[in-house]
Length: 347
Image (tube, rainbow, N blue to C red; front, side, top):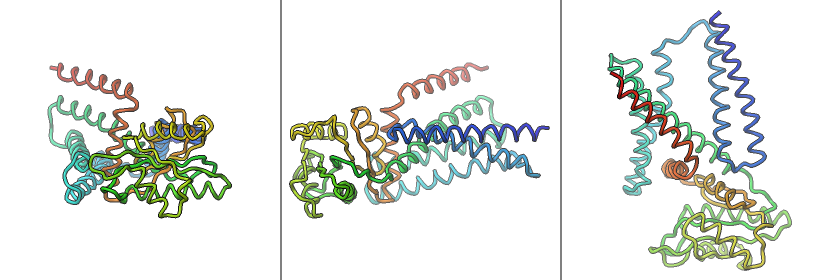
């Protein structure tokens, strides 16, 4: 009887997962720039996976022990945490210590520590009840943020890999810093992806412009826009097809100044279909900005060196946490604080 109940619950989870997967696919088809679609798809995968696992386990003869189940659940986050630690240490030795290079180490230590605390509370020696309750609270907070990270990273990789649409009127390439006068490998990857998108539009019979975005930093000998334009001309792009936006300092200014520059040239922003090119870890935040600015845009992601990718994704993840879903984060934080105060007040 119990097995039938669990199988029914598993079946309902799978059915709910299928419904959410369909809803998520519709959302992506209608407007792929919605960051919330990532959470719909993650919920669908979670329900499909947990429901299928419940059915399989209950229909099998062997039911896993509590310790075995804890071990299975603890292995993936532990492996990820150790991998982040190794990546962070290698990145620091290669690039030097900085906030961005320290992020993998911080996240790795946090993930491993959280798993260790959760396993100890669940299966270790007797611990005070308040310590167990605090561990459950910390685990809940950790699961909340890890779910955000998985949704963000997975959807960013998916969105950034979409094929360039051929009907672009402008291909906008965002800058990301120079090595004095020359483009860095990270920026070169963006420029190469931008050239591919530009040529895709040309082959479809359109006559797009290529917009290079970026001002001059304190340690740079020229503007990013001019250095990028020189690189594009070296790749065979005609100089008259390049528009240089030389004053922006961040992504929001890149987009606003780009529209103003095009408008001065007689290209009305409301009629534009734009392809924006940035790095693959930066696509979701850029896409969200284009949506807020009411720009008809697709954002493409250029490849990033594998050793630098975890740190770059984590930095973007922190930025998204700080700029999006603030009400959700505040609600969760207040709820956890109330629970924490209740736990402390217990005798």
